[in-house]
Length: 74
Image (tube, rainbow, N blue to C red; front, side, top):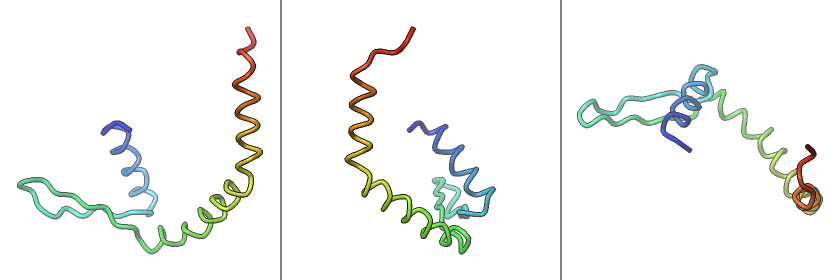
């Protein structure tokens, strides 16, 4: 992940109230991101997705292999 991509992602999360940006010092610049109470409510749905992925990993791997075995259609 590039610095630009990371910064853009953190800015979106901050804008949406998921994290808060805290400036710890200006020289040298030190910034910390903290999860907000709203961000903490995101944990449960993420856990559901992770459990789904773990349960379905064999099927996902088979789908990937099948996809990779066939060249792209022109």
